[in-house]
Amino acid sequence: MAKVETRQLALINLAHCLTHYSLLILPTAVLVMARPGGAFGPSYGPILKLSTGMFVLYGLFSLPQGWLAARLGRKALLAAFFFGTGASLAAAGAVSSPWPLALALAAAGLFAAIYHPIGTAMLVDAAGDRPGRAVGVNGVFGNVGVALAPIVTGLLAAHFSWRLAFIVPGLICIALGIIWARTPALEHHLAHRNGRPFPAIPPALVRRAVIVLLLIAAVSGLVFNAFTILLPKLLADRLGDNLLPLVGASAFVATLCGAVTQFSVGRMIDRTTLKRVFLPLSLVLVPSLAALAVAHGIAVVIVAGLVAAAVFGQVTVNETMTARYIAPAVRARMYSVRFFVGFLGSAAAAPLVATLYERTGSLVAVTLVLAAFAVVTLGCAVFFPDRREELNPALWEDVSGAAAVAAE
Image 1 (cartoon, rainbow, N blue to C red):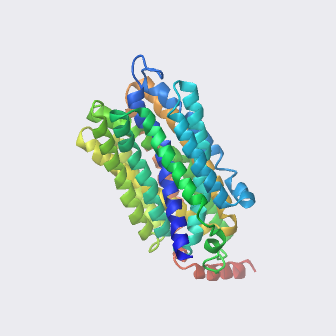
Image 2: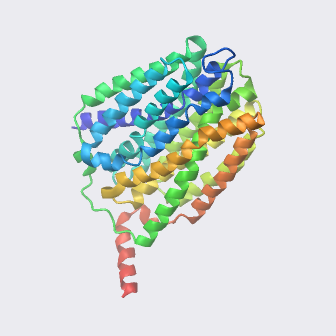
Image 3: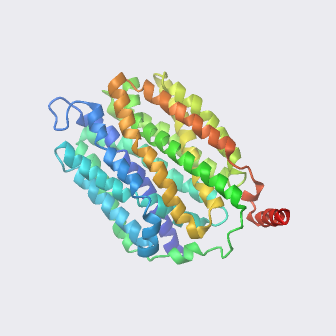
């Protein structure tokens, strides 16, 4: 049982890696695809906009996943994720004109939408009362996907073809789907490992946490996605776009800072309240995004690393918020709603980056707009509850009892 469980959790983490990897192939591949006389045109902006449908469906189809999981099962949905995303990426590498590419990317976004509501819910159920480390490790896998996308895509596109940059991860995704299909389901076992009822948290605190969660989801979804989309182009502009492998390597280093931070944050939030981790990260993010507008040379890599650390660290905090304040029975649905709201923000990222770049000829305006949105995240961090009961759920009973006595 333990061996099968370990394999299942490993595949859930690898699925997170592939989810973020698949969404970020085009932002680097476009640096090769955009050329005079090419099938997709000579300009960065119009080609990048072809990924808009991908992010729209990535957001829209996250909403029904909790409903589908109750009817089809989580294991079947993750199988659909592996095979559907893999086939769509392979199709994207085979097309030769803009609209078929947009359709293939949209299909990849539709299937990739399955992962976060379903995979995260399975992971948190397995983690029990200490979800921080599990979410942190899972976040590292997601960030490795973000970090690998520009460097692997850059190497494949520069030395072979941009087509292989889509086909290779597509085939890997399908291969992992075959392994997943052959792995026994352990959903019931994972969801009931603790056997301990979820604490009765005062409704007012739950409402406050949910309001912050949904507001953060909308804003951080835009900031997260826009940053990961613009990073390859930003580095190309500041370091030299004739050095594509160097651009990919620099993006990898910067994004890896986020992976390291996410793992560290995951361990920290099992030892302290969420607000005490969330607030410092939010304080770092605003000035770092503003500095990214003017940084050049090696400084742009360092500042991008700070932004990645803050952005990705916040993801771990946000996912743990749901685990600590939402009961397991409705957690998958809450993840669906939260990721739906977040991915609507994400869907606006590609057209925002492309449009502002086309109009201004640089990414300065984009980074300043993102810094303004990050101020909203800072406000959410200030408003979020700071409760010691998060670390010892049994204490919520005392809080609920005191509230009942006061009501009488």
